[in-house]
Length: 107
Image (tube, rainbow, N blue to C red; front, side):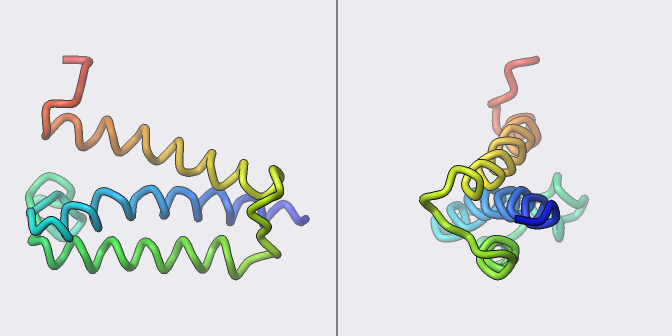
């Protein structure tokens, strides 16, 4: 597998992780931060905007994971970069969103 396939899988995992909060809160009908809010990333966007943003992230994740290389869910060489991207993005999201929703333990 080429090096750029690992990079693609890593960023695919990051986009996949970013899908979860936006799609989840959008489907629940709640407003949530998005890049389209004012101020970007701090203000709230409507649930519809978050559903659309979540679906765009899911589409990008699919393109990066399923259309680059030959992804095999049973192969650790394929799954580890995706999982690593998800972990890095999830930690960043938990810190960023935690500041607004009371989840930031750093004070």
